[in-house]
Length: 251
Length: 297
Image 1 (cartoon, each protein chain N blue to C red):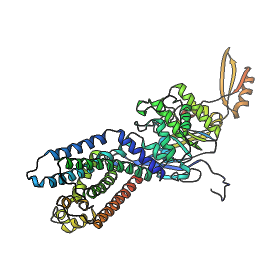
Image 2: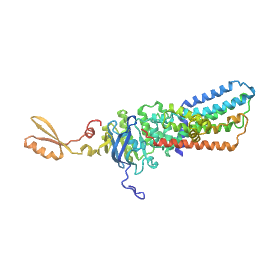
Image 3: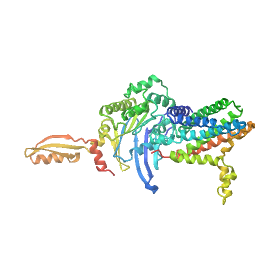
Image 4: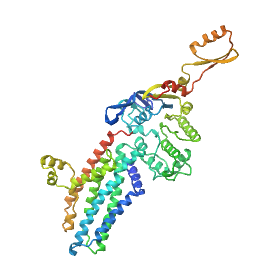
């Protein structure tokens, strides 16, 4: 495990030293500021409006961060041949994957927490109430971020970054759809589509922005189940990624 | 074979048996052999040169040895274990061809992180002294972004030497280096060998292989075409040079050992004086060109 943590730390330092991360973070904060500056049509609903769009911004940020951080990590390591000395001697392929994933997940978490703090600041500046469930909502988006990150890693072992972006975004969109909505895409094969949708990830379980924007309380059991589901699905995607990585020849 | 207890016999740092590697052909049609039927071994304390023209299969073989490529046929054993085994990987130092590293780090940071990943004892002082040994004194904390190719190769050497490896696998470590740097690399390889490390050195610089290697393995077209000790390869067929004078002109005859006496007798019968008889030493280049037919296969 020491090797994994050291490599995660190395990944963390590398990502902080590259400008990509700061660029993405800046875009998210600007988006939040933009949402906050748009006047609501209904003053009484302004808090709900800012909260709803703010959480949507954080969720979109999780997707952008996952893609921006991880889509080019492995292809770049391979292209620049920095992968060879790592895999040949100190690290196994599993340690490489876990180290890169952990490093990117920590950076993603830090960035999402900063964005959440930005949203809180905006709410305070508007003299609005900060709901108690804002933190659990952000944590669930963080779990969704890990799932997206593991998906990006999975695709990165057999596609190029330009292809990884649409594939992950497509899966992200599908993961938000209900079974009925997905089955409706191909009306001629509803059974097949329903089965496929059940197997595909259900990122909608991470979305509690609407209930908290409307002032509903989130049950702790629901929160724990959603976290458990996200962790399990992330582990499954990482296992698939490792299986693909292990089958690859490193020319 | 592995024997019970700590006493082991016939254990070589590296043993390659009938290694074969095929890559997908153009447009994914069929497969193309890169290496086939290659068998050799590196014994404890040996420096073995691995030579062949571009595309002969040297780097492919090395990548199979290190577990970066999966062999299509044959087997590879490092101290009688699979290349993927963690216990043997710890005993290897590797210098890749054209090494590159994340350029946001300095070599000192790299050494510190690699040491932690490999669970090695060591501190900043020891890594500074290692960097000094490979000629990077004064550049320890400079970002790799500012490094030349030669400096990256020096850093690669430092990373390979960091764990005091029992086997050094080097893929053209001195390619692109100036003569002084090449000499420094050679000296370090010899120092490591004197320490007890075995070395597997792939190189295009035949004079270098001839100077420092105990044995050489020659590849051509993905196949092993010659292998043996340097003495055997260079003077294997014991050719002799007989110097005589005919018609007031100095003449040299190169003959195999079996024909030496009859040649001398023949010259004497003709009344020609035999001025000198000496062993005709070949260069590794002669051996290489003769083994490969002097052409790319």
